[in-house]
Image (tube, rainbow, N blue to C red; front, side, top):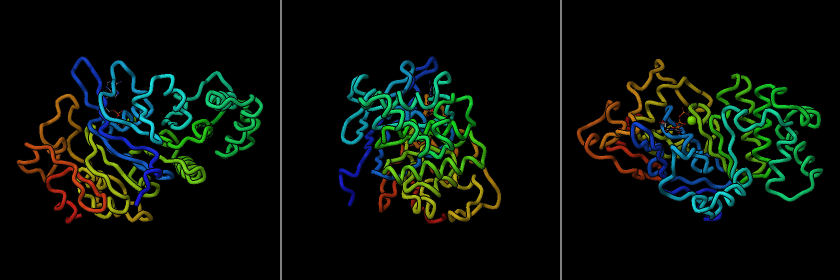
Length: 335
Ligand SMILES: Nc1ncnc2c1ncn2[C@@H]1O[C@H](COP(=O)(O)OP(=O)(O)OP(=O)(O)O)[C@@H](O)[C@H]1O
Ligand SMILES: [Mg+2]
């Protein structure tokens, strides 16, 4: 049994929308999930399905206008972040909850030395002397395995390579030892050889610090190797959730099966390649005019009449394996 106190994050019925000229975009619709201490939860799905907006919602960084969180709750260590005012939220952001982005320059200040940025981040949340914060900054750079951390601390972001910048951003995000780290495609912009190193680093630090991790990625190979649990999103909604083992052994949503069929084999992770790479035909529907029934139905080979008429409820098919599909059991059988 999970103890209540093990829960770092509990998101319930989160709803985030964008008010645009072409209508109301439901970017995140009725999303619920939780993360335990030290756990890695992966969020996967095609471009535009609401992964980044989910992370930004948790950080309360959705640009308003045009965006707004219109419903739900986000409980971080028992505090509902959506109920905080902006000053209270600033005290939590970068402190109890941090985020690392695909492109480090979005969170690093180009005209400030790396070390000073970490010092500033630390002193924003802790009243300690500058000297002490400086020591923490160098320690953090050492922790993320930047060589010669004391010297590097005096450099500007542009003096570092892409991989080193990513390490510096991770150092900054973890400097206050947050309970939860959100990583939005943290390695996508990096060279393939560096990607694996950065991912390994994030996981090492997570273990060392006991941080809960929400890892947003396109890469199911990465998911198989890192996460304990997975959420699959489609058109702003969660369509499947399961342990990594259950998801790869018997995906219950046709969309998840499609995602798996479109990746190359990762033998170490037990993922067997299909005969050739195939893409899921069609595209994600407009979030303004979602179909009445299942949003995936127009692209689904298994769709029946009912799929177009009624949205399938997100049902628990056993052991916490959730799927929103009228034909989930049949999908699992053929997997
Ligand atoms: N600033 C914005 N204004 C209007 N709509 C937005 C804005 N930001 C996001 N959206 C809409 O919200 C939806 C979800 O976007 P989001 O960035 O979360 O997708 P994603 O799953 O992170 O995709 P990707 O894999 O490409 O990063 C998109 O359909 C997008 O059109
Ligand atoms: Mg994104």
